[in-house]
Amino acid sequence: MRALNIVSTAYRATLEEQDDTIIWLTHAMKDAGADLSVLLRGSAVSYAVGAQDASGLAFGADRQTQPPQLAEDLKKLLGKGVTVYVVSDDLAARGISREEIIGGLTLLSRAEVPKLFGEFDHVWAW
Image (tube, rainbow, N blue to C red; front, top):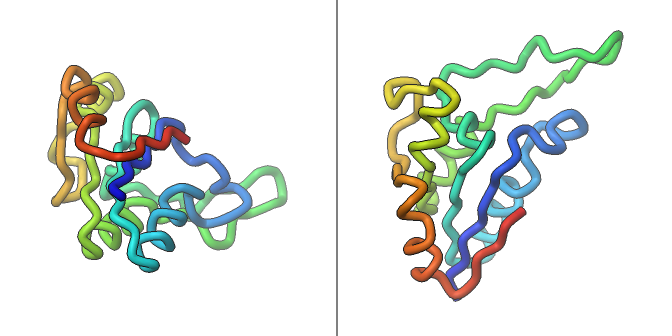
C-alpha cells in the first residue's frame, strides 16, 4: 500500500510539541515499514525553508523550549527514502525562492497534483 500524506496547514500543534503531527506520524509509520510520501502545499510549504529559526517563540511568559525544526525533520524523512513533494506555485505565492529551500525535495506545479494522486493507493489530507 502506497500512501500520500498531504500537509496544507503550517505549524499545527507545534505550540504544544516540537513537531508537526503529520510529519512526526510519517516518520513513525515509515520506521514501521509503511510506503509513504508527503505533499506540502498551502502554508505548509514554509516547512521547506532551510534557514527558519523558531528558537525565540513565546506567548506572553510561556516560552517554547523545544521549538520546531521542520526543515531538519524533512531532511530526516528524505534520508529514510520518503519522497517529499512541494507545490511550487505555493512557494511563489509566499515569496519563497528555490534557493531558500532544502535540497532533495520534488517540486511540482499545482496543475500536476491531481496526476500525483493517481500514483497512490491512498491519499490522506490532514
